[in-house]
View 1 (tube, chains in turn yellow, red):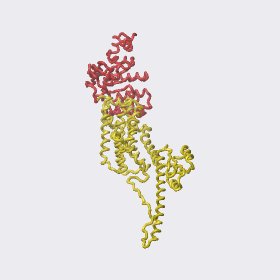
View 2 (cartoon, chains in turn yellow, purple):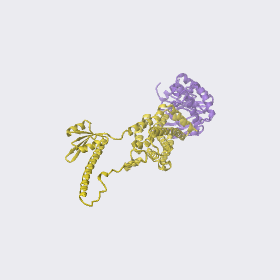
View 3 (cartoon, each protein chain N blue to C red):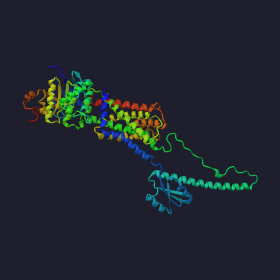
View 4 (cartoon, chains in turn purple, red):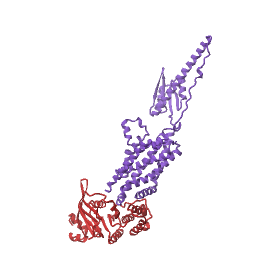
Length: 376
Length: 241
């Protein structure tokens, strides 16, 4: 009964704090939409290449490459100038039988793009050279055959050789599926975690510094009732927050969700409760709002790195061990599986189990931790 | 003499290496206002914390209603008002009262009745539906007192209740306290305002973690042969008058 009264009060306070509400509900949407713009903008990099004494055929091949603009220079010096003035990203120079490439290399992706484009152009060039040679050989072969009596008619001609057609099939999403789609399930969890952590931690901190916690503890309320009251209220809030974020990502950002939406909400709710328990625990080590903020770069931001946004399997073994204690990793893994592969929640036992362990452990710590303020 | 409501015997409290309280002894009986007087840092708030069970004594016992503290259930019979106002600013006065009444475990029907009563006592009936953030300092203090009075507790513990309030309100608060005392309740009040000590029935003078005197204001003045409690203090501290 007291648990409900505390939850009721916390929700009432939050509903009247319009700015905090906006932070919880509008800020994640705002950031998600911005991120969507940033990542779904054309993935290709446009580069400008200067050529010096490059053969006509190769020059044409380069010009035909997508996202490549070619400028012809008569001397290396003129091209160098262009490179210095940031008008060029690279120079291709033909020297006897070899090519020499100079990159501005201020943007690694542009350097890679030029390397790729040049390689392709060179390959096409070689191909067409081979082709014409082949055609010449075939022609002379035909001539020879005609001179010979009883010669069978050739079955194939080089002109008939066609490149095989490639058709792409996507298990999840389509050809537009990019980095954003991969990080979105994890980001969703991150927003839930971050805002619930911050706001609940601040709320309990305020309760402590304003003296209301002491007053609360001067009544026969149980310490567990206070912790559960907070969990109940922020749990309810997290449900709404998650639903809103999920709906925005599906309808506004057109992200495909293969699995069940309810499962996504359940995982995020669990994560929110972990964040809440974590926030409350951390707030007991802070003496002011500013000190609470100081925990963000130390405890919250590093979680992003281990959440799966950067593939964990490429990391060193000892780094992977750190990831094992990061709640966001488990929720990120679970939501990614639900959203991109439609995995059912029942087969995500490990992720859910670990999240539950975090939740139970932190909750017990919180209930015991309140002993600092009342010995019984 | 009736059984003591608060009985502190040989209370010792240390924080780290620092001894805040050394051998505190005094009692509060029903129908009595006991003033706990002492300079800042003398250990007044620590005594309150031990009485409420927020802290555990390192030595000695604090018994309230005959039971050794800390004891969670007993808190239902104690009304506590902290030094700070400790109110939820975004909630209205009414909502604050309802919340704390629920925390004290009052039933629904009691809550309505109790809130009407305590609001009348502190004169906030007309302002109950306003948000606390819009209250004046004095109104917050009164609401804070009203919360302490919820549920007609047998023991009321007030930590510096009259800090920062105007003289008229202070008089009003003391009038209420006297009424409650006359109704048989016990009140433990801390203050560092010496002239307030004169209003208490019994005064415990606290200095450096020790109760240097525990008696009625009149007897204390007689004993130290001075005119005011303030002088008693100065003399006890060894300041040349």
